[in-house]
Structure formats: C-alpha cells, structure tokens
Image 1 (cartoon, rainbow, N blue to C red):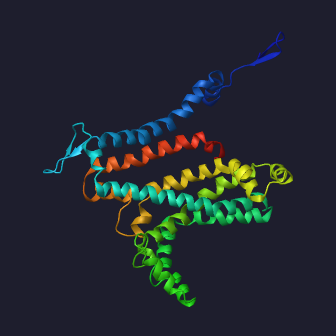
Image 2: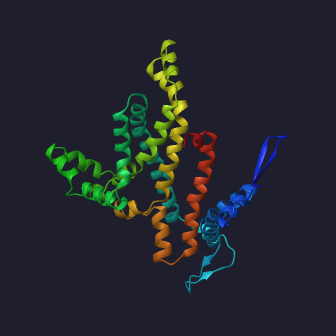
Image 3: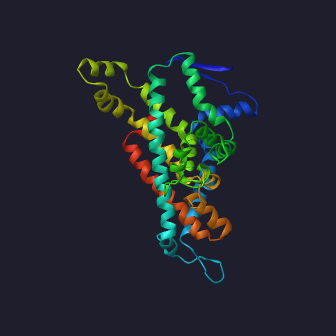
Length: 320
C-alpha cells in the first residue's frame, strides 16, 4: 500500500520517495528549519568571517601604535593613534573629505530631483525606458575609463578649454581657476574638477531612489493642493518635498558614503591634498603605518553609522 488516507481530517500521507535525493527532499520537508539553516550558513559564515571579521581586525589594529624607531607595530592597547587624527594635517584630511561628500550629495540632489520628477510624473512608455537607459548607461562602462575620460575633458588642452576659447570665455575659466581654494592650473588638478567628476559618477545613485519615491506620491494630492489655492512653490514645499524626502535621503546614503571612501577619483583628478581614502592607502601602502591607516578607516565607519541612524529615522530605508 503506497498511501494511507486519514478520513478524519482528510489528510493523505504519502510513502517516502526512494533514492538519496528523494530521502533528502523528504527530510527537508519534515524539518524545514534544517533547510533554512543549510541555506543561510554559507552566506552568514562569509559575512561573519570575511566582512565582519575583517572589520573587527581593522578596529583592533587602530588601537595599536607604530614604534617610531623600529617602525614595527606595537600591539599594546593605546589611544595615541586616534589622537594623531587630531593633528592639523590629519584633521584637515577628515574635514576636507566631509565637506566634499556633503557638497557632492547636495549637488546630486539638486541636479537629480528635476530629472527624477520628470521621469516619475511625465515620462511614459518608451520615454521612461529611454530615461532608465540614460541613467543606467554610465554605470555599465568602466569606472576607471570614465575617470580618465573626464581627466582628458578637464585637462588644460581638453575639450572644455577649447569650448571656452571658441565662446570667447577663456577669461571666465581663468577666473574660476584663480579662485584660492577650488582652483588650480587646470580643472583636472583642482577641487572643482574633483567635485564635477564625483557628481557625475554618483548622480545615478541619487536619481533612481528619488524617482522611486516620487512615483509613490499620489497625483491627486498635488491636484488637491492646487485646488485648495496653493501655489506651485507651496505645493512643492508642503506636499511634494516631504513625501519625496525619504527617497532623497536614500540616494544621499550612496552619494555621501561613496564619496567619503573613494580614493581613485581624488588620486587621478585633483590636487596633492589628500582625502581619507588616499590617506589610508598612503599610510598602509607607502608609510607602513597600519594602525594610523586603520584609525583613518574607522572614521568613515563611525560617520556612516551616525548617518544611517539619522536616515532610518527619516524613512530612507523604506524608499530603497
């Protein structure tokens, strides 16, 4: 008899299937928690050992110090390495990176919001597909290729300088380059050039979450606001912006964190003044000061932990 029917609850209990895989399937069916355990164990081990384990090792390294005479790492617990972060040169690196991250995030939000609004409210059919293609297409090309392409564009002999010359606006470009903080010999070796490339590279990460948040805003709310006599500016300030804010904050998580930790863009485009990512690379790869490099690495982690806690309160995770 291959099956037993229990008429009291109308449940059929089938006989076990033969073979190894059949018995294994039956065991998983009888013990679903075993299947869940086997499925989650490999990724959890990878996350726990490779990712979290490396972060813990990094954190421990930051509490060590470097011997000034031998150059060897002293494994005794100390906070002197973190105290070095307060030195003027190191503290300037942290402030410089924070300011750049904040400015890039603000610019990406100002540029990305109109694009996301148009895509959410007006683009339909093939135009919406074209929008997604235009936003996503830069992400499909090589990161380094884009940066080196921008280096050629911003160079003193690049196409941007040529355009300014053809428009007889070379005086304007020279005036910008002569500005004390953001200028330089050319845009490719200035903070302004670094800022432009940062905004270009990370802009899609701001547009997509903002567009997703705007699509969830009911159109009748905007119409009701206009019917009640609100001006377009009042509708934007009191209706549209508060409802789209979680998406903007979600996009800012990407733009802020990616700028905070990037070292390739400032290395290729920008002045000789370091950012946090460059400082970590220099201290660990060139100077051999692993504890100070680890201390520098902890700074973005702490900043992003605070930033994510604030973003969570603003509902950013619901917009991802």
